[in-house]
Length: 272
Image 1 (tube, rainbow, N blue to C red):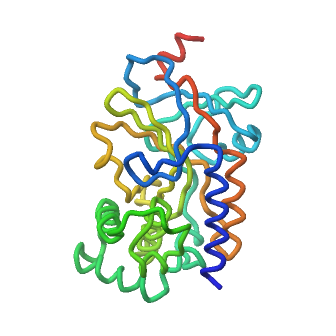
Image 2 (cartoon, helix red, strand yellow):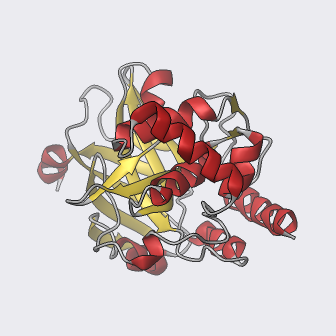
Image 3 (cartoon, rainbow, N blue to C red):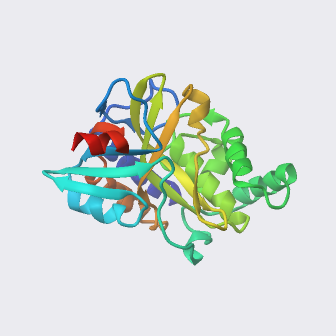
C-alpha cells in the first residue's frame, strides 16, 4: 500500500517537472532545470537579490511566500518580483508536527532506527546539523533518479535517490534525535563560474534552537565549483499522511516557468 501511494507521488513530482527540462545532464540531483536570466552579465550577486518569477498562479505563490522570510516586492501580469537572501526558510516556531513520526517521515520504522543508531555511534548522542548532512550524503550511496518521492523507511532500505530522498531521510533522522525538522521543496539558484543556474530542488529545514536552518544533504558545493547558492522555499510538506502526493501536485501552480532579471538588491534599486 505504501509503495502504491509513493508511486502516486512520483507521478505528481513528474507533473511538476513537466514545464522545465530535466536536469539529469547537470551536476547534482535536482528535480528539473528552470530557465533563468541575469540583469547583468558581469556583476556577481550580493547576499540579497531580487528576481522576477513568472508563475501560473501569482496569488497562490504570494500567499505561500507569506509564510517565509522572502519579501514580495511587486506583482504584475503573472510575474512576482521577490527579494531574498541565501538561506531563506519558513517562519514560525516548531510544533509537535515537526517532531512526529508520520507516514512519510516514518522514523519509527526499523530501517530508519538502525541508521539513527549508526549516526550516533559515529557522531555521538547529539550530532550537529552538519554531521546529519554529511551522514545522509554518505549513506545514500547511489545517487539516482530511479526513485520517486520515497518514504524515509524506503530510503533507509534502498540507500538511493535524488534530492527528495535526501531531504526525507535527513528530516527523519533529525526527528529521531529529537530535533524538529521538515521537508521543503523550492528553488535553488546558483551562481557558479560566471554562470547563473536555477533548479527545482528539495531539502530539509532543521531547527537548531535559535531558528530554522537549511540542511541540504545533496551538498551542491561539492558538484558546483565556487558556487554561491540561494535557497528559495516554496512548499513545506505539512501533509505527511497517505495523501501527501496531492500537496506535491499543487506545486505546479507556483513553480516558475522562468526566472528573469536576477540582480543584487543594490542594482535593483538603481534600475527602478
